[in-house]
Each structure stands twice: as structure tokens, then as C-alpha cells.
Length: 276
Ligand SMILES: Cc1cc2nc3c(=O)[nH]c(=O)nc-3n(C[C@H](O)[C@H](O)[C@H](O)COP(=O)(O)O)c2cc1C
Image 1 (tube, protein in one colour):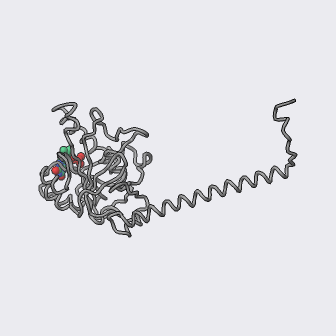
Image 2 (image 1 turned 45 degrees about the horizontal axis):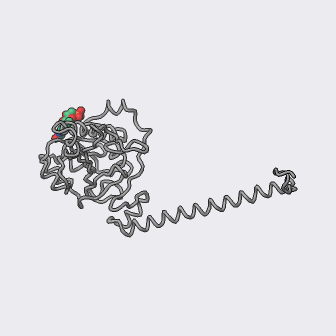
């Protein structure tokens, strides 16, 4: 007795039947996709409601920031762009220390891009970052002091950049830009930049391996990060300044930065006011 498929009763299908089956399965798949769309939409709605209810920014701002996701007390930033923009050679050629800014706010995407260029993770499934680090120990942290109208949707506060999640976390409330400028030998031009980026080093993270030399390595790393920020600002059509003259202890105190960090660089960023 044959045991192959030919032993099974063969359906007697006409081409009309086959067309009907194809149509029916198409409709079935369409139904599944529609249900998926509704589920996705529901997830977005719930995330939005959660944000509006719990995140310590105004409801109106939370509504605007559709892209943000709450993770503990941190907010996810928009995904950075890794192509396009101004050619690197042009950015190097045109980069200058900018000390004059318009009050025009930055877009959230621009802040995201600047922080990513500083310390963003650039490996698909890894941990390595935009700037090199001796022994990949990453002793540097990056903060941004913002005013109430500095970045669309964000409050006046000090935010810490969290590379692992490409997110920011509020560490101090209020617009502290004037205080930061005062601490920096009263270079008040800094306070007019919508965003003031502060780069700090926590030496034990690197001296544990490289001893005293680790301090040198951390400073070199901060320089790389600073140049990345300069060039990214340029590519976005923004301008950045750089400041090394400030009171270390006061800066850490005012910005409420915890741990044992040493501030190494301050970089005010914004739209350039011409003549710069
Ligand atoms: C480590 C470091 C510290 C600096 N500190 C200050 C500062 O406190 N205030 C300031 O206005 N410029 C500061 N600058 C910017 C320099 O004055 C500037 O880079 C230099 O004049 C060259 O100009 P350019 O950057 O436009 O090419 C600093 C630059 C570096 C690298």
C-alpha cells in the first residue's frame, strides 16, 4: 500500500477556489496586522499617559515630548543620526570658539546629537563610545545645564547624560547657567548659551589600572570629547565655546554633582549670534 502523499485524498480545486483561498488568507493577515497597529497605538498612548502623570515636567511639555520614555527617573533621548550633515573637513575648517549666542532654543534632537557625540555608545551591541578611552575605562561624565527655554520641552535644570541608555537624568533643578558663568571668572557670555555642557572626570575609575598616569589619560580623553562636541555643533549649524577657567569646587557644588569628580571643561553651545 502506498504511504506517500499520493495516498491522501487529493482536493479537487479549481483556479477559482485557489483565488478564493488566497483572498481569504490575505484578509486574515490584514486582520492580524490591523490588530498589531491598534496594540502599538495603545502602548504609545499608555506611555504618554504615564509620562504626563509622573514625569516631573509640566503635562504640556510631556505631551510635546512624544519620544521620551521614562526609565526610573531618566528620560530617553531621540535616536542620534549617524549620517548626513556637514562634511567633516568643512566642520574642522569652520570651527571657532563661539562666545556670542542668540536665545533661540535647541531642538531635543540637537541636544541628543551633541551628547551622543560626546559620550554616546557607537557599537551596535557593545559599550564602546564616540571618544577613545584608555583601557576603555570611561572615567568621564557629561552634564548639561539648561534654562527654561533652552531645549524644547525640557525644564531649566542640570541633566546628566547616561550613555548606556542614551538618556538624561535630572540632577539639579533650576536654571544654573548664570551661577556657572559667575564661577567661571564671571565670563557672563556663557550664561547666554542655551546649553552649557560640563565635562568631569572621576579619576579612581582609571587610576585603579593606570595609577597616576590615569589622570593624564582622563584629561586627554576629555580633550577628545571636547573636540567631538565642537565638530558636532558645527555640523548642526550651531556654535560651541570652551572654558577652562572656573572654580572646580564651586562648580561641582552648584551643579550638585555627586561622587568625587574633577570638572575639566565647560562648553557653552547654541545658535551663533553674528558677528560672533
Ligand atoms: C583648555 C582650554 C581652555 C580654554 N579656556 C577658555 C576660557 O576660559 N575662556 C575663553 O573665552 N576661551 C577659552 N578657551 C578658548 C581659546 O581661547 C581658543 O581656543 C583660542 O583662542 C583659539 O581660538 P579658536 O578655538 O576659535 O580656534 C580655552 C581653550 C582651551 C583648549
